[in-house]
Structures are given as C-alpha cells and as structure tokens.
Image 1 (tube, rainbow, N blue to C red):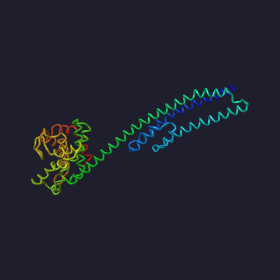
Image 2: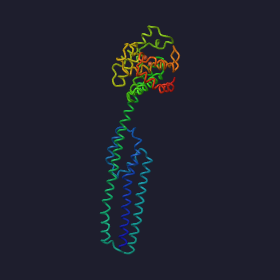
Image 3: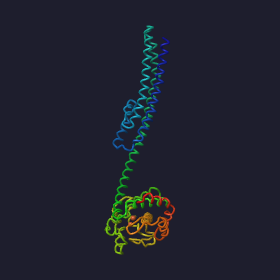
Image 4: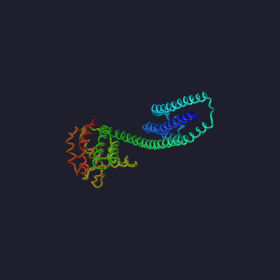
Length: 364
Ligand SMILES: [Fe+2]
Ligand SMILES: [Fe+2]
C-alpha cells in the first residue's frame, strides 16, 4: 500500500513537472513564435482585418491557441509549433495511461481496496498541484496576450504607415507623369525632369535644408516647366534659334505655370508654384518673367534654377550640341552671385561629384 502511494505521488509530481514545462512552452515559446511569424506580413492587411484580429486576441486564452496557431499566414511555422506542442502532450498522456494501468494491475493483484489513505493522498497532491498549474496557465496566458497586443499595436502602426507611404507614392507618380507630359511637349525627355529633380535634392541636402525638405524640393521641381503646356509646339520644337518674338512667348511659361498652379494646396504643390514662377529669375534682377532680385526670390526657386541650367547645358537640343560637363560646371561657377545664388553655387560645387554621377546614371 505504502509503495503504491509513493508511486502515485511520483507520477503525480512527474505530471506536475511535465504540465509546468508544457505551460512554459505554451506561455512563452508559442507566443514568441507567433509574434515572429506574424511580424513580416503586417503591411498588406486591411483595416477591418486588423480590427478583427485585435478583437480576436481578447479571446486568446490557451483553449483557443490551436485555432490561432493554424492561422492563414506563415502556416508552416505555425503547424510545426502546434505539432511540437501536440507531440509533448500526447507523450505525457501515453506515459500516464501506461503508469496508471501498471498501478491498477498491481492493486488488483494484491486485492488491496482503494482505501481512504489513497484518496487522501490524491486530494493532498491535487491541492498542491492545482494552484501551480493554474498560476502557470494564467502567467502563460498573460504573457501571450501582452505579446500579441504589442504585436497588434505594431501591426496597426505599420498598416497606417503603409497607407501613408502608398498615398505619397501615388501622388509622386502622378506628379512625375504630369511633369513628363510637359517635358515631352517641350521636346525634352522625362529624364530632364528626373535629373533636375535629383540635382535639386542633392544641392538642398548639401545646403543643410534637411532630408525631408530636400525630398519636397525634389518633387516640386518636377513641375518647373509646366507652363510650357500653354506655349505653341511650333515654337518649343523649332529646330533653330528663336526669333525675339518667339523668345518673348517662351518667356511667358513661368507665369503660365504660376497661373496653372495658383489654386492648388499643400506644401509640395505650393512650392511647385513658386519654383515654376521663379526658375528663370536671377539674383541680379536680369531674369524673367518679373526681373525679381535676390531678396525677393525663394531659395528653392534658385536651387532649381541652377539644376535646370546645368542640365540644359549638358543636354543636346535641336538647336545645339551638349556642352562638355567641365565647361558646364565652369559656366555655373561663373554665374555665382549674378545669374545664380551664391550659396546654391557653393552647394553645387561641393556636391558636384554626386551631381555628375547622377547625370551619368540618368543619361538619355
Ligand atoms: Fe523653364
Ligand atoms: Fe527645364
């Protein structure tokens, strides 16, 4: 009898240890596995799906864990984790069945009745075991829920960031397409727009305007010649030098650009309007259309002015050959303080290696 009680105690303790190990796996490793498994798939979920998952996580007690393991993303990892868990549980179960069978076989062989002492020993063990199991379960569930909740917070953040990025990308693509239409009409290719945009960004960064501002200037610069949409094609595409009258018409394109963009709102479009109006102005007041002087001009307009002239010089046109890049570089430096803003020319000079690299990469 004593021997049997000891055996029951031994099995009970073993079950308790195994249960605690299981709960530990349950409470820690599976949530961590799921957390890792869910992380990469965050951005392509829609809002309702994210909300549903947050609501679901409230029901995520261990009893629901298997449903959750067999989720739709990263199925292989989740099945593996669930498999490991099930194998451990099955192992404990099989071991318990065999042990109990052995005990009862021995009991019936010795014809010992199931006495009060045996029952009391079971009761004592249950009282000790149950709180530990319960505590582990609650701890595991709490850890699991906390990790999941953090995962959903990240997921929701990534979702919102993804949406914002997508909106910005679509806006950027639309602006670039519109700018390319303008450039095609004025006999240049879309690469002129892209080169001017990159040169402007590089100079803005060199001047310390910050990465965000540089990006906005880059985008706004793509519409600098939008007013050319209103200039007759015969003048824009004329394969010879323009007459004074024709040049007077061309000079109207910054004003037309300003008119086209006058009712638009937002930082990028507002700056696009300024750049369209000012990109042919000069600090010495000899530019067009208004002949404004340095103090009246925006730094963004003057950055794009340098980028536009440098690209015009280094590009082939129907009426001229492309200049050698060294000659074009010297021409920009020569215009410091008269044709171009001094600080912008300094930035051009300092960042020239990068500008020249972009020119080579975006050649026609
Ligand atoms: Fe222009
Ligand atoms: Fe241009």
